[in-house]
Image 1 (cartoon, rainbow, N blue to C red):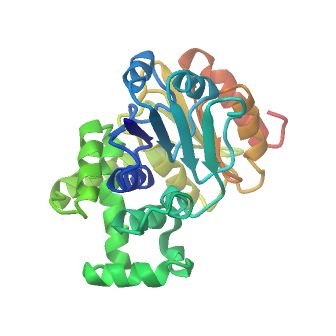
Image 2 (tube, rainbow, N blue to C red):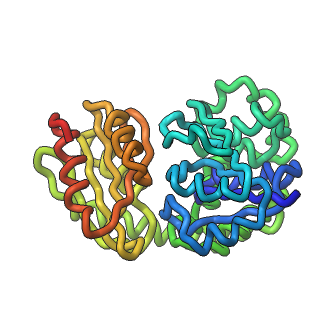
Length: 310
C-alpha cells in the first residue's frame, strides 16, 4: 500500500520524514509551501492517491485532516498536545509533549535511532539532549561518525537553510541526504544562505517599535518569523514581543508572539477551536490569517499579552 509523509520544513520535520522512509513506513515525502499550515485543493488531490498519510511535526486544520481521511488513513505525529480535535475522523494522533517528533517516532513506531533522530532531537532540545536516556547510544553513534555537539549544532542550522528561503527542492534534497547519512551535503551553499538569512534578520531588528511591548510589522522576503521573535526577545531582555509578516505568504499574514508573563496556551486553544492554522506553547504563539482580517487578530494577540481577554 502506498504511503506518504507530509512534513514541516525544519530539521525535525525533515529528519522525521527521513526516518519514516528509511524504516519502510512511507514511500515518499511531501512538503507544503513554506509557512503554509494547511492544504490547498491541488495538494489534497495529489495526496488522495496514498493509502496512508503521516503528518509529522505539524498540525493541520481539522478540515484538512477530514478531507484526507475521506480516502486515506492519517497518522498525525507531533511533539505538542496543542492541536485541533481530530475526534471522529479516520486518524490517529500521536501527539505528546516530548523531546522532538523524531523521538516520538523512536518511542511509538520503534524506529531505530540514527543521525536523523539525533538531529531532530538536537534541533528541539539543544545541549539538553545530553540528559536524554538515549544519549549513550547517540554518543557512540556520533563518535563513529567523528562528530560532536558542535557538529550537531552546525548541521541543524545548515539543514534549516532551505526553509528560510522557501526552497522546496532544497528540502527534498535534504531528506535524500539524511537518508544517505549526510553524504553529498553541500555545506558551502547552505552556509552562504545562512549568512544572507542572518544579515536579513539583523536588518529587521532595528525596525521594531518599543512601547508597552516590542512590536514589528514587516513584509517578509524570507521565512524568518520564528527566529526574528527569538532575536527580539534576546535583544530586549525577555520583554513581550509581537511580530507580523505581511509579505512572505501572498494574501496572508504570519503572526508570531512571545510573552514572559502570560500563558499563551489559552489563546492558542481559542484559535484552534476556530480551526485556524495556529500552534505554540506557554511562551510562544504562531498564527497565520488572511490579510483582510489580520488587523483584528493582531489586536487580539496584543491585547491578550498586555493582560486583556484578547
